[in-house]
Amino acid sequence: MKSLSTIAVSLIIVAFTVTSVGAKGNDALHETVSALASKYAAMGSAAPYVTAKGQPVAQQVSFLQEETLTLPVNSSLRQIALIRHGEPDLQKAGKFSFQDAKQFAVDYDNVGIVEPDDSFFKIDNPDEVAVFASSITRAKATAQYIFGADSQMTVSPIFREFETAMGKHSPNLRMPIKFWTTAARIKWVLGIDRQGAESFADARRRAQEAAQVLVNASEDKSKVALVAHGLLNRYIRENLEDMGWHVVRDGGSNYLGTTILVKLEN
Image 1: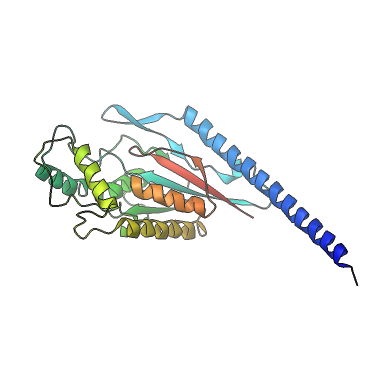
Image 2 (image 1 turned 135 degrees about the vertical axis):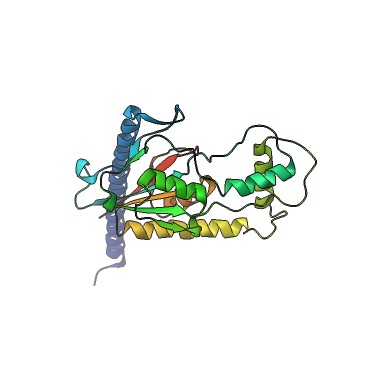
């Protein structure tokens, strides 16, 4: 029989070998993700802007095509794009009373967008892309603008923005709308004056479920696009990263901001 010392040495060698292989795999993954991020950066540096009412609103972007990439042997690429809706077609300038702000919140969920002159997200083959959209009007309108009114897409309330309530009580002030919406969001996070809106904890769980929906869809189609909202997309992104996805394009949180994550599969 082998001595205990011999067995111990063998186990150490096996552990070292597994660790080394894992480290090499992580290095290769890091290099590939970095290369993909560099490709997106290069595309962005040369991409033109689309305009709305004569003003530039978003740079053109598209998914990377796998056949043009150098990937590790026997691996495939999945991509998920998280797109914020376009600018709602709603007057935001000036100062609002509390009642004005409450009406603004209602209107905000029921208007279309200031539609750009051309789609900023270019899709070479629509059949390769699974498209999802929030059920809120501004997101649905954005998805139709990007992908076409007749395109196949899944519209679901699971992708709606985190809910907030303006509440019942407020000082008698006239302030910019950003003041009211920010105050409402803070109260909601703290659980104050929610008036039946879902809790912050429930909203985060919904974002986790939404992320899983997108991951499941990517197993059928390697390119997935979601048109939704700033805060929801932020938490979906966090959940995707927890599941091993990597950000290769950070589009920020402005209107039409588009963040793309990738995952390599062997």
